Length: 324
Image 1 (cartoon, rainbow, N blue to C red):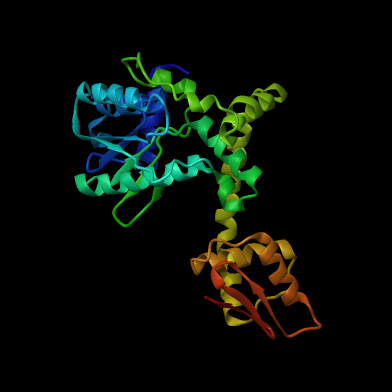
Image 2 (cartoon, rainbow, N blue to C red):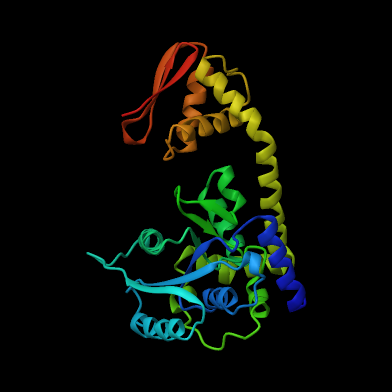
């Protein structure tokens, strides 16, 4: 796709999906890698139409987990110093009581977002913007599928989601491939820092990126787009099904749910019901036990233990949630 068309399509998406506009103040999450640097340049080089040009600040977070962390921080300081039209720039360092050896990516992400929340609040930004692109979206969908995530998680990352009452997360590049980003900015990004841990295939996402997805593309060159199309269709199906599921949840709360429905449908209803009550750490195995309990014609009572001392309790035709 020609760069001019690429840029025009992205601007059209921003307007159609109302990702941001001139009244917004966005905080760009910069890592030192080429994708986030292209995002920063695209937002600050002054070529966006006035109606979608937000105020722009930037944040870099040094995780202090890699040997080249100091070098990367120095590089990003130089980038910030030479980036025009920045309202503010912030560099923060993460501190660890003990350097993690398991779930490193998840722990680092949690700490990173906590810092970005604080920085956004301090500078008055109402949006955090990240450079996640189509390749990242495919990795996310496959990762969630492999881990056995719930249906709604297989739709991938949304382009815009609310984090708090005052803060939203925006991912404008989800329809663009990593290769597309090279064509997006008018002045090419010449320097960046490659995160060498991204090549370490002991991490699940790296294995997907370097081994699984290339193998899928050997089967079909359009494999990534087919995965994206699957996620979009799943999103549409969920939107159509949502009113019916909400009605079933209401039936459940009123004690009139038809427990003769197929078990897989009842599990989805229980998921939604518990989600409404902020009970998120529930395994499908536990929900399947609750369904079996309610379908059992030989008993009128019983209990399924959940995490955190929460319980699902059968009382004749009613299923009750008792919070611990």
